[in-house]
Image (cartoon, rainbow, N blue to C red; front, side, top):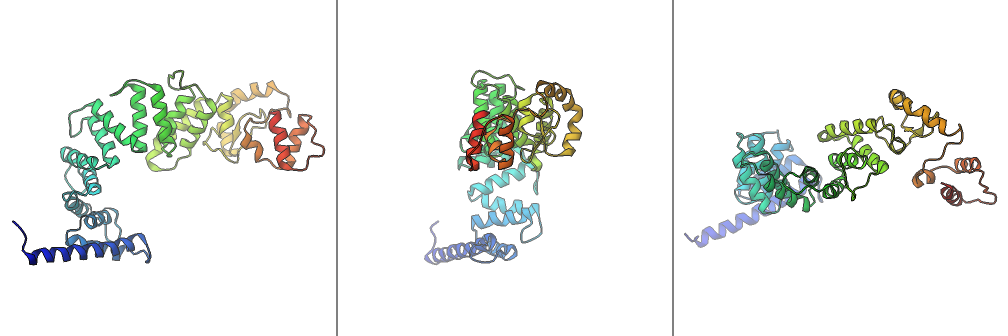
Length: 359
């Protein structure tokens, strides 16, 4: 039924009013050109949401879900997300799917969650694509289908989703839903690890140190693997707690390899401010606490490595970054130990170059 001229004018006025109100609320929420104020921002979101503004409804749902500007209320959050989602707003569709899947403010309904995930994924929300991959892989809300799950993981991974890239790497390693390909697994893990995903850093590091069966395209690289494991071990984000513990266990398993103990502290994964073991000169630790704690593990190799070279003649760690950070006095001491003349050399950069050429 066509609208009357009066109704059409009123709708246009409401739309303009809702957009202006939402814009002001968004500025208050982000602190753009005005002081940040969650309480006042929420009031503007509510006014715009009452006029049917889909984005304002989604932001109001977010305010209730996070407790920003008002008390946290999962039921009200789900209510506003649903109003926004039913208008076709993709982010709200994803948020509502999350709540339906977990039962936050609504009854658990995996079938409905998948429906909203699919609506959001069709509009390019890669987090929804990742979640659809999980639903198909586990058979939650849909019939289990590893191939369809891998397809959604691949779609999300190609859009830069670090979680999907990490999971897709595991799929290629196991051949679940895709052809087994260790090289592809390493490629996806590297992309995810470069975004700081501790799970991918753990998996790629374990592959490089030889914990997984590799192929010719992924040669063992103990030092690079140790650094990735160290990055995972240093992650403090709660969702990566399990990866952090597994990375520390992996470093401990490879404590008998010089490249590993020379790349990081095997006690905590630290890579900066390390001190050498005074006995063998190969292992490096962040401090006395880790050194004492790791001594029962390290002492098995320490004596053997110390016997290979007389005290004071330990070879420097082959790392250009390590050498470049040394003070001039230490550079000269190491050159003296190698009986390399630096007479007439005044610049520190020249001392660094002399030492690097000898390593």
